[in-house]
Image (cartoon, rainbow, N blue to C red):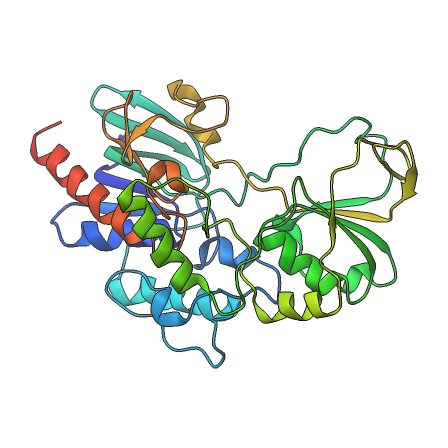
Amino acid sequence: MNEPTLHDVIIIGGGQSGLATAYHLQRSSLDVIQLDEQPSPGGAWQHGWQSLKLFSPAEASSLPGWLMPRSHTIYPTRQEVIAYLTNYEKRYGFAVHRPVQVQSVKREGTTFNLQTSRGNYRCRALVCATGSWSHPVIPAYTGINDYKGKQLHSANYTSPDEFTGKRVLVIGGGNSGAQIIAEVSKVANTTWVTLEEPSFLPDEVDGRYLFRAATQRFHAGDTKPGGSLADIVMVESVKEARNRDALRAVRPFSAFNQDGVIWPDGSQESVDAIIWCTGFRPALQFLNGLDLLTPDGRVEVEGTRSVKQPGLWLVGYGSWTGFASATLIGVNRSARQTAQEIIGYLQAGS
């Protein structure tokens, strides 16, 4: 049986991080392919809720080489981002194989062998750009398995319609939690549960100013509190919810029972549904065989390069793989540096 073609580079992931990395690698003569588990372009944006928007204008939310077209609104919609990523992929003619789910990765000499849902692939350099959408986190709570109501993570939330007239807890104090409580509170009796009091940005500040300010502090080595990429941007829906007094948050409950939750004072509250806006872990389970993953699911890196595994890079997973690398505008820096390192690595004959 013939061995699979040996590619110079395989990028796992067809979303924004994979596309940005492919763009910078395309300028070389390397044989580069992408493996995307999604059946169509658009990355994780295909799974966002219906009303999801960026909180920066199109010109401040673009991948390298081609600006996102202006939106019909101030901030591009989820559908417009999907269209942009789809057309970006077509514009540059990237070799994207889909749907291909990578199941495991093994090191064999100087090459990587990838076992996938569509057979084996081989490469000399490997880039993981899978993001985190497919690995949502739900905290461990006493009695959570006893609760009989509906539970879903923001990864699977689409619209408020199914919650009309119900008693709903929205758990999580980031932008997802704020935007989801803003629209669910219009149709349901909601309670917003956060670890600490939510941090809201001034109304006039959007993602552009937030990114610039955070970048300046990053380069200055300033880690003091201030406007950060984790602060809540006051998009129109969140402003409207504030005006309705729907953004009052309470601290976490202690446990679940069959009908709802138990608060720290011992009181009980019946709840029809829980929406978890509690974040994600890196979707890197396929690397288990390389013995690289830390307890929190990360890989030890210098920049984006794996410290323990030569030939492996990770792009777009957040601050641990490069400042703001999980954003459309921020991933360019990490992707460019990664491409340069890969080219040097392969030219050196590794």
